[in-house]
Image (cartoon, rainbow, N blue to C red; front, side, top):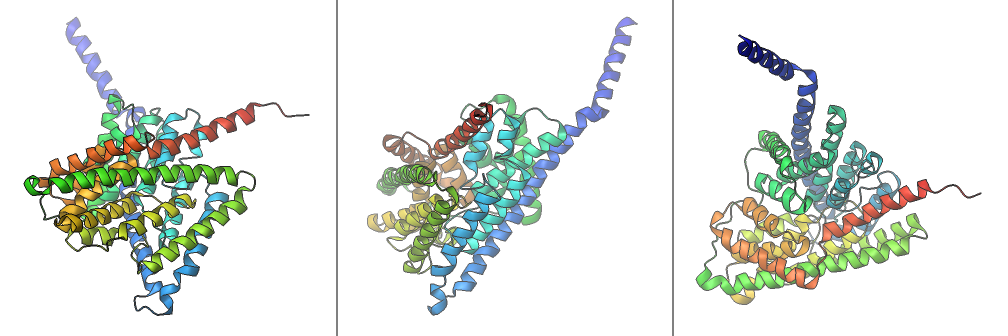
Length: 449
């Protein structure tokens, strides 16, 4: 009888826990946060597409005077975005991935709130859309990571959840998954890029967030592949020189982008220190004008995310031989300008352009070359080879190329490590961590008499 009574008490206690508000409230808030990330990501994607369509409608395609409108609109747009980011949304500049990485390392809630908050969600989305409407060579995928991490961190506050680091990781993964409709890439990104010291106990959080955000995205947009379905298949018997070239050259060019971006941004930060706002706006104006000049010189191909150009290359339409150089420059200038915006989509466009050019040189199919170029270059930029090949595999829907993409990504990563051993996002995240430390020390110092 004693044993039966004990089992009955345990059953009653278990039932009480399952119906307890303390147990269910955090879970419901977490689930709502993950679904919200999916819905916000879809809305962000639709608004970004509208912004690019507005820019193309504004500049025209007939070669008339409207074709030169970017020479005025783009620098003004850059200045406006930089001013709003500096004055009203500090912490929204750039990709957003470094902010999410930095927030995982910060312990203080106020420091995290400066990098991840609902205020920054609004600013990040709005300013990225404005940047695209002005022709900036930026993407929405990196910003979606900061948005996802911000939403999930706010859900943690409302739900009384203590696992802030794990929830930031889950929100970031959900953002990538919903932005590209690539759930596997979201999980791999969380493991490889966001959490270099990944904790197994966050598995459930990451998987649940990715599933719920993905379901919300699928409910609105349906199942799709970001770049359509790639039909070309790599034949190692004849295409191995192409795999080697795209991996090694792509990784080298990607590492060069990362190296230049870090060095230029460090110099700009030092130069801006004396007069932060005026010099920030001056840099934005110069970069915006340079992006406009490159865009006009390229016939408008380098404006925006580069999605159309990359998709065309994957489908077999060769890009101009020097498109990758022009897009490389436009993406670099947009990144160092200080305006909000990511580099995922522009990097994939550069990689597709590089691959297209190498394909023409080696006599290979453009679609195959574009895929391999994307893998090599993207792995070189972010130094995250698993994320590179998984995200490209999911975005193109052709699993026959998995080994070739893995080879190109690993070659790109290995080449990049020889040139620069400093991963781009993690190097940038240390800037935000250092700023938080300096702010804490300044607050701790006694006032001078």
